[in-house]
Amino acid sequence: MITSPNDLLKGYVEISSLPTIFTRINEAVNNPRSSMNEIGKIISEDAGLTARLLMVVNSAFFSFPQRIESISKAISIVGTQQLRDLALATSIIKLFKGIPTDLVDMEGFWKHSIGVGIAARTIGTFRREMNVERFFVAGILHDIGRLVMFMKIPDLSRETILRSKEINQLVHIVEAERIGFDHAAVGRGLLQIWKLPHYLEEVVGYHHRPELATRFPVETAIVHAADVISHAMQLGSSGERLVPPLNQEAWERLALPVSVLAPTFEQIDRQFKEAVKFIL
Image (cartoon, rainbow, N blue to C red; front, side):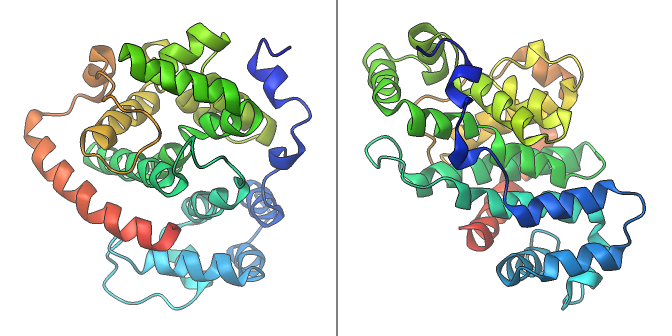
């Protein structure tokens, strides 16, 4: 009997580990003795990842004045942590296969997640946050628990989606009522298994209830707002039909003037189209 996110994740071999190449990149980035050259060599072992990363850094996502032809050059300009985060964002999609198509359109799901990532990165940029790629990754991962539920408990997931439509209620609320926990809690549990940075655990775990975030309240508020924006702009679809309400406390944490909203939406729309090309 499943009574908690841990029960759902227990023994889940299919997604119990991240791609080996990312694990090696992450270990190298976290090792103070690793050089940029060593990190570049690890990335270059995966031709597909190398091509995707070069496509990213040469896109409107960064708008560098000159074309970047090598991973070593990309690392020197973008930075090791940022490139590590981009490697995760562009690799994660391959882990989830075999989800019933009547539950979710996977292209639409990932478009929504990309939209949240772009919106979060854009908000972070307007706030002059450091390493804005971490917000992009957080956006990509924010609904990952929903995919685990689709794969592990498809019938129950189907019931919650249908019920949410019947009563016109947000899916995560119906999940909590029907199952006892929601996809955000499942996502947080998965990221703990993956041993990803703690800020990702909190952001994913509380993106629907940002007022509960205590260690990374701003990061969580950014992704919460980005999720609302992505739904409002109809950037893909995660299976949620309604636009979630914007949490007032989260909005106040962002301290953004209303004047930035119009340029924010324009930038999100432009970069979303670019990001879809290099991720999907």
